[in-house]
Length: 294
Image (tube, rainbow, N blue to C red; front, side, top):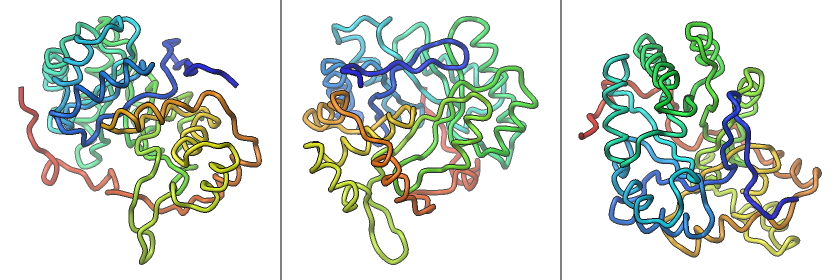
């Protein structure tokens, strides 16, 4: 057990905090204060994306914070509208300008874009160039299936450091995680707490599951803290989102206890195999090719 946020070593030797703050669906007017609350509370990993439309506010929080930029692990993502080689390089510059930084710690391709995988490959080759030029410390992907990972790796020169995918107790993505492990890619969990979604004819939420609630009672923790600890026990990185200061602090208070192997297995057994959101392979330039403002 550690009293501090563990550092995970990526396949290129770069270290990344295991637990961070995600800002997906954080309104721009709420993002700066949320990121400041996180940094002031000990977070050192901040995850945003061009398609979240709050990179400027993340950058403002970093600039206003008393935390040195060198101590912050900053991730953003390239949206599918800017896939391709030259367009990806241009979009990278736009993100850096909005964030107000000179270097990124991690840059991800946000979606696989199987309908035009040639553009995906070209965008990743642009990421490889940026890595070689020292403008980003690590590169990776998000929502890539095992088959898409195999193709991307076979056609490019650098194995992604991270594959950021949806993982939570009700949708634990064993096949995708095994593919990541096979290639030496870190699994990073988006939507790590699950949230409410429809399973069968009912709305369901891992934080309301009797197994999770019982473990919360046993360890004198909240259900969210139990689920985040489950991610850490598996060696994942997790990026829960909140704009509420007390919730941001609560989500970070998970380093003073551990789950026993049988407790981890009990949560593993909750997997439904049902995705809580759109299939990444359903996203294409026709239905999600919205432009990113500069």
